[in-house]
Length: 193
Image 1 (cartoon, rainbow, N blue to C red):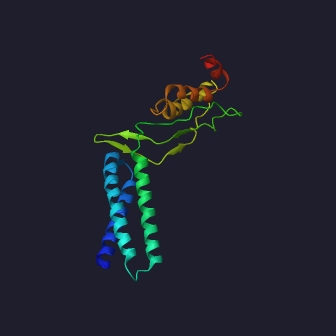
Image 2 (cartoon, helix red, strand yellow; image 1 turned 90 degrees about the vertical axis):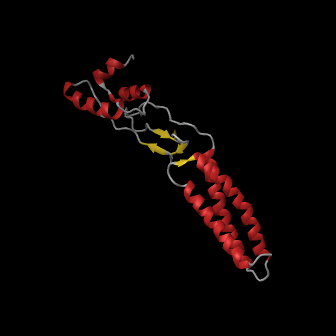
Image 3 (spheres, rainbow, N blue to C red; image 1 turned 30 degrees about the horizontal axis):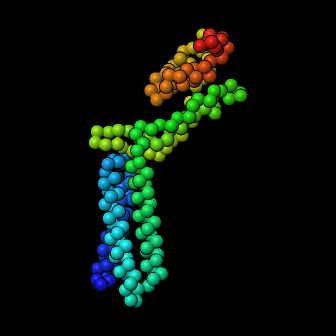
């Protein structure tokens, strides 16, 4: 059996390593390959921690309530870090989930329309980069155009900036935004398209 103070010191170093790993996996834009490698090393840390903690607990005169509390803190931090790492290293290449356009609300507006982007990933030079958190975009407030000449310039500029030039919107979604933004004579012109 080893000296208790050296065991406690080793256990503290293991806890600090797990804390660094937790801090790493919760950073923005982390490399998935690096997470995977670090996760493998941390699983070795678990075995070492179990061995050291068991030796400490078997030592006479050790306060078990204090050891139980330490074990609980370590386990919580360890499993949280490994859980996050596992979630980030699961294959999610370029997976975007976008809710489809739902048309106009009963009052003719687009207020209820939104896009949800979840689990977005980018493929970078050395490996995948994870971007998070999932975000929810509110509806774009596009002015309406009734076909009146004096409304055209304002409508055109805003619609072009918000919708037409937005590369994240697929063409069909852009068209639905257009259909929901026109009224009157302008709506009649595109009704059959």
